[in-house]
Image (cartoon, rainbow, N blue to C red; front, side, top):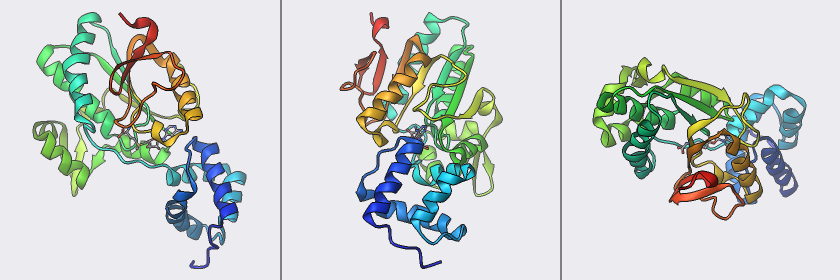
Length: 276
Ligand SMILES: C[S@@+](CC[C@H](N)C(=O)[O-])C[C@H]1O[C@@H](n2cnc3c(N)ncnc32)[C@H](O)[C@@H]1O
């Protein structure tokens, strides 16, 4: 359908407000081309002739909300994104944690997991750690607001650049933890054994309440304004065990927000009261 009406300033403002309402994501008017490109195919599929008609559909038909969320979220990710963080987890966090919690189960939360590369990176490091240092019971909870992303993460099938990059950066792990699957690869079942998935909006407290030793909250705060960043870290706070670490993305910081977290190293935060 080529006749979809233009995204005029008033409709764009209403659309940006709708994105914020359902996801917390703060978009500016500069995102109009991106919104147009992402929403038009869906509007065409529903035979809706204007953005206003599509917004009315989102507001009146709850079953459209997950589609809308899938379309407006940005889900770029990769295995072992930001290598220094994975070095920190493998060489410092895991050995220290195992020493101070003998026999306990390590609980990890991949809090905006997108298509799962982050959570399987964590699972691979735990499996590697077990091979070298003995038992390390662990559980990983992967959550995202996008149902479509969670389904991809649960399937654990990857192809294209995602796999090429992994093979280049971690050839031994690519060979050990993946099997051929059509044109791409699929994570082996042993990597999925300790993983569970749930849809979760970071602007709400995690339900049922759970506490973690390591929270990966990476490359998602950048999409929120300061008010919603504050809400996200406040909601994550009860999910931190006293000695947990919170890991952010490369261009993210919470130092300017009022927070109970203290800076340990770039991207790495602990709870204030647990500082030595
Ligand atoms: C760029 S990806 C980051 C993936 C991964 N953490 C990484 O660092 O590679 C951002 C993810 O945040 C999710 N997201 C956006 N708003 C969210 C919200 N309010 N609650 C939960 N997840 C959200 C998106 O669906 C997307 O999958």
